[in-house]
Length: 239
Image (cartoon, rainbow, N blue to C red; front, side):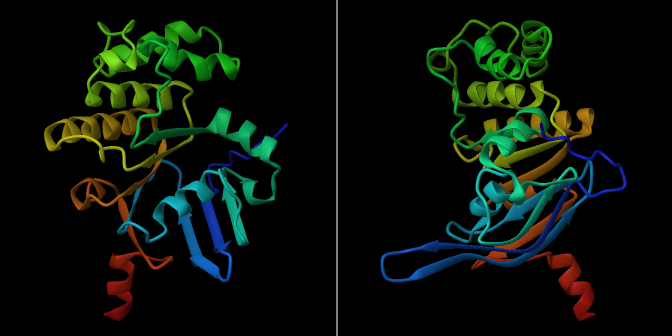
């Protein structure tokens, strides 16, 4: 059993000398190089970069979906880079939420069932009541029994957001959450994501290429060729 340390003085995420390489047939590709990062509890952070810059790889390592080649990732007091795959999965089930660009809803399940499923698997009490509450909060109280194919893209992302917040995660990772939506729908979804994040006090870590969405977060980092920088700090150092 994984027991993360919830000491409020400890950063929610701490990354030290993080490097990630992938072996190719005749070479080794370095995707991330020497990344250091600390994110405090309740912060909203955007990681901005072009396609291929390494931002989605970084998000996966922060969430424990993969392990680094070198370095350490600490999430809520647990050094997840040292945990087994099963231990990382257990930690994510209780402590982490995800919102993806592609929604990743199960097509055969209704909106209500999609939100209930992770709660049931994690053993939460009254999963249906919790799922209904969140779907009503995201404006889908009349769409509980609709399957994903019966919902618009914006509605599907609202279901995904409800699912992500249902287990009351301490940290939520969002990978291009408005990437598949038109501007108007994307704005509405980002409003909802930020509002829920404030209400629940969740730490939000978002990967995006959308500078406007990134600007809504408390801090921004830029990633280029696998190296992470915080522009405001860089400017202060230069001054």
